[in-house]
Length: 146
Image 1 (cartoon, one colour):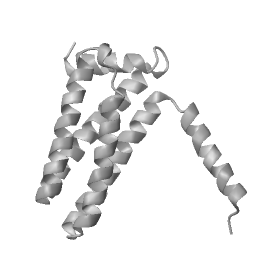
Image 2 (tube, one colour):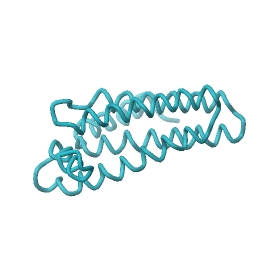
Image 3 (spheres, rainbow, N blue to C red):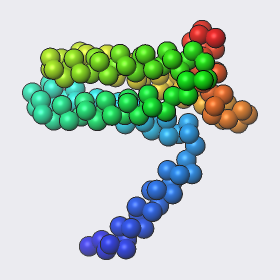
Image 4 (cartoon, helix red, strand yellow):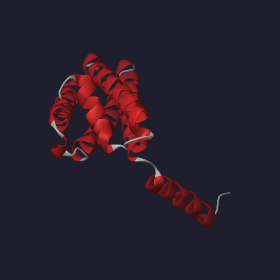
C-alpha cells in the first residue's frame, strides 16, 4: 500500500522534473502526448468505441491548443505559420470526431509526427550552442520561411 507521504513525494518529484526540464524537451513531450492520444483515438474508432475515441481526440485538441498558446509570435513567420497549421489540425480533428473518420485523425497525426521530428532536429542542432529560442530560427530556415 502506498502512503500519502509517498504519493506526495512522487508528485513533488514529477513537478520538480517538469520545472527543470528544457523547453525543447517539454515541447517534444507535448507532441508525443498528442500523437499518443491520436493513436488511442484511431484504435478506438476502428473498434467502434466512439466515446473513447472522442475523449482521446479532445485530449489531443487540448495539446494542440497548448502548442498554439506557447507560440512566440514575434519570432518570425514560423510562429504564424505554425499557428495556422495548428488551427487546421484542430479543425480536422473536430471534423474527424464528428464524422467518425479515422483518416482525418491519421492526417493530423502524420503532421504532428513530421513537426515533432523537425523540432527534434532543430533542438539537437541548437542545444549545445544557442539555446531553444534559436531552434525556431533553425526550423524556419529548414522550412524555407526565412
